[in-house]
Amino acid sequence: MTATLHDVARAAGVSIKTVSNVINNYPHVRDATRERVEAAIDELQYRPNQAARTLRSGRTDMIGLIVPDLRNPYFAELADDVMRAARAHGFSVLIEQFDADRDSELAALRGARRRGLDGVLYSVLSLGEDDAPLLDEVGMPMVLLGERIFHSAHDHVTMRNTEAAHAATAHLLAAGRRRVLALGSHPGEVVGSAGLRLRGYEGALADAGLEVDPALVVPVDRWHRVDGADAMRAALDAGLSFDGVVAFNDSLALGAMRVMLERGIRIPEEVALVGFDDLDETRYSLPALTTIDPGRSEIARVAVDLLVERITGDAVAEPREVLADFRLVERESTAG
Image (tube, rainbow, N blue to C red):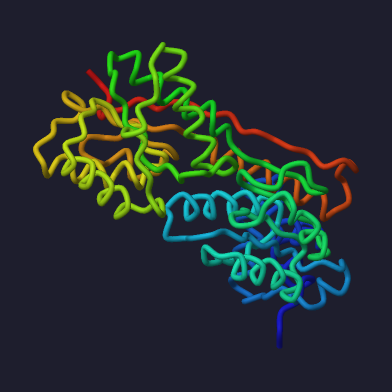
């Protein structure tokens, strides 16, 4: 016979409400009580009736995370942060990725409604300000991530791209580097991570009384390790002279670092290198990579909090825009 919520409560010696709180991972349950309830659930092999819960509450307790590319480690680590934050609210997360084109992005967005989610976190890539009305067609609570579609009818959480890139560049300039290469630009981009980080790089040079050398602004297509490696190889083959590198994400930095080390370039003695994202692997590269921590965990936590408020009806009426704090994490690639 299938175990019920009442059976679990009786076996654990607690109320049905306490069992429900444990199942929904509410944080205020005492550890000893939680362990007792979880032991009873395991012993009785109790499985919640999700269909019944959905009918009672009108919710599935599941949110979506729509991101461009899980091969980009930033989004993989963001997904981990989002799942942890959602779990604290009793929500599960369905992850959907899209290709780098408008049709794929719109298909992923419209698919959220068909999947019966309570709400979505959406990292915008191809859409722009003029596409804001399309977001309203999804018909569910939504929080936007990233650098596009500001001032819409939806909450928006993102990072301080320009200020952080300024800090990364200023860090190298303060160490006496004068020919700093910017790795990862997207020519013509104004809105978006690449455009905003380039603006920060240019601002730091201007503050130091230096002009931007267009030859030191190195474009790439995508922000993977292979792109960083290919771009650095081309720069070195062309005889480009530089003593510092600001990479617009850590994957580009790690790819560039590999090529420089293969060519016998000493880091940081000859070239100092800063990345952006504070990926876990940057702690273990040789040398360990100096990088920008853009507040990814804060972004995930705040975005989930805002979304849950929209789902439960506890949110304020006006959309909110939140910028996470950042910090420069100095490691071996710029030390000395």
